[in-house]
Structure formats: C-alpha cells, structure tokens
Image 1 (tube, rainbow, N blue to C red):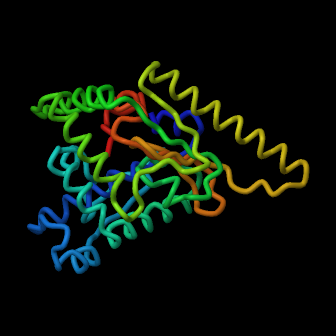
Image 2 (image 1 turned 90 degrees about the vertical axis):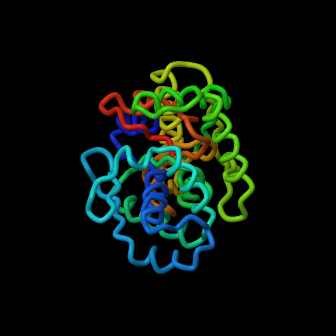
Length: 267
C-alpha cells in the first residue's frame, strides 16, 4: 500500500524494514545470533550497506548486491526485530533513511518513522489492522514466494514481534501524538490508497492556505507509526509521507503495495 501511495503522489518509496533485514542477514552470515555479541559494532562499521535509488523506489544493496527474497524469510524477519533493539543498529538505519530523503519526496514505511526518524513530517499515519487480517496477508505473501508455513504460526510470530517492538526502550512502536490512525482491516487496496492520498491532499491544501496567510508552511510530508509501512521526508522540513505500524498494516499483500511489482514490502 505504501508503494501504491508513493506512485499516486509521484514520490519515491523506501521500505525501512528491508534495511533492518539486510543488517540481520549480514550479521547472520557472520555467525552472530545474540544481540549482545561483542563483534556487532565492528561488523556494523565494516558493513557495505547502501540504499540506492532505482526508478521510483530505493533498493537495498549489501556488498553491492541487490537484496530480494533472501531477506524475506521468517528467520531473517525474527532476527531483524531482535537486532533492531540495539542503538547502533537503529542509528545506522536512521542515517541511511535520512540520506535517502535528501534526494527528494519520499514515502517511507517502518515502525518508528513518524516518531523517531522523521518526527517533523507534516502528515503522519499510524497504520494498523486486526492481527488475524495481517497474519492472513503475510501468510499469503509467504505462500506466494514458496515458503512453507502455517497461518497460525505467522500470527504467533507477529504477536510476539508486536510485543517486543512496543515494549523496547529505544524507539518503541507507538502512535505519534499528531499521527492519523489509519485502519486497513477492511476495504480494498485501491480504497486504502485513495484514502491516504486524500489525507495528503487535504494537508497540503491546509498548508498552502496557512502560507498564503503568512504562516510558516513547513514541510510537506506524511509520517505514520503503527503497523509496518509508511512514508517520510527530510527531518525538519521534508516532502513526503511517513508511516509506521505492524506487519501488513497498510495492506500486507504484495500486490497491495504497488501494482508494478510483486515484492513483499512487509518488514
């Protein structure tokens, strides 16, 4: 859904979860399993991790190689959530996201985009959906790419991850005070995208009116926390949309994110 919103608005799209997954994959390849492994700082410093523009989206590269389904496995999913509690990991991801935002308007999805990464985005969304709906969407994503699993297991893992992310002391998953809560439990993908585009249009119109009246317009952007997916712009005056939430909160289906790709964009 976030990618679909970006397409409608003419913004670039970034999936922050892919960056955390890339970190988890890289650490796993070095035999790192525990979050307190003393090798992590050194490995992070040597990590050749890039977020590179590719048309209307950004792709994540590790060691110069574009990452795909290898970061979408359940194992990497769980590992990325565990390593995300580390301050140095979050700092590295935040730096990459803000560098991407310097290139222009963005739609960024994640779990702390509107609260920690782009707190000044003009429009923030806290995207959510019922756990059963999210689990069903994620399960279908995994089946589509040939992963064998059970829907109940997917729901259990999602519930555990939600609990871990909402209870962590560093940048926990929560709704920003100025975020719009956007529930995607019902409705079609097209309706959900249209709803967010309408929110954005209303926010831009209001900002233009304030600017005409002599007020400081500030940044154009949308930031959302809650379920995975969102959009964001440069901190302190970005053009873009920022959204946070739990897995699948913005649509969960691969085709719900961008009709031009079958990439699974959940984190």
